[in-house]
Image (cartoon, rainbow, N blue to C red):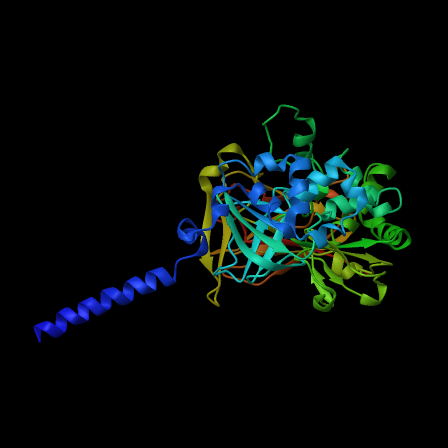
Length: 474
């Protein structure tokens, strides 16, 4: 019995040793495989390999031979000589373009073809991201000979060049002068939509707000200049784009015609971009914007083939018909998110509550019991309000034993307009219609929730779960 136990242990150790060696990766094994190329740099190895010698020449021509002679670890996807022969002469004869081309084949760190991930996004030295799929596909190229190791990395031979593509923002900029929508998007470099957008524009100190974006579209909608994420943009032809702008103009009235035009264009373009790159066969019939608008995708309006770019897809559209009822969405103001109040000592009486409705659904609200003054109010701010008529509702939870009254007012066209006082029923959890406001000018809307004008306890409380402004679209 003792002999059997010893033999079993010996067998187990032997099997474990075999398993450990069989699971090791090629990069870890490179020291002991006898390959003389492990004594050369990546540039030397690529140049001395007959299938990739032309790309080796480009490494030297662009100065990347020095980069790939460093002690860091790199992966190079080296196009075959046959692939390099297809390279556009315009790139070959342009030093800047050629450098970007070479950089798009090099990444910092080692990527073996033996991988556990099915798909990985790789950041190239060009700052573009390429998709390494399976063990033999990089972007649109196939690895025909993998895992050639040098002393500072690995290279794979591929059958196609990996020319850097424009991203969506670069494509938009290339369309200025012929596309009104592109012209407007780029013009947002020079003026801002929201006051907070001006910070990056006026700041000139290096390092301060380094991550800020100075274009209002990139900052507030989606940063389609970001190479890491992917997007879908619908670029509308001039006639269709101008038609959409005109439809929105009455609902974005500003103090001047020029401002009205700028905001009408902004609210048109902000609903034309979505996260994720949707291929044509994946494109749904409807998409919801980050602002809640529902956009119907009419594929019959697509002009030409989808434009595949480094961080997504652009569809050129003859027109995009977005019904007003789907675009002019309700605005909800949460009661617990109040930036101000009056009088100043009201804060001590304000309770931010965590409650559950009769159905067990949790929510937060703000409750002020017995304000002690006859003119107390809570202040709120609604953004992106349209110039139009709104039907207004509230949900206001009164947990005290008596009914009290409160009213809502807005600062509209330089005057404060109030709805009538409305009784707040005890323990009533449904929405209540409280009246209409006809908003004269679009933009930010200062809103007041005012208490009953009395100092008597029990009758001058305030409470709000939310206010809902619903556009009255005819």
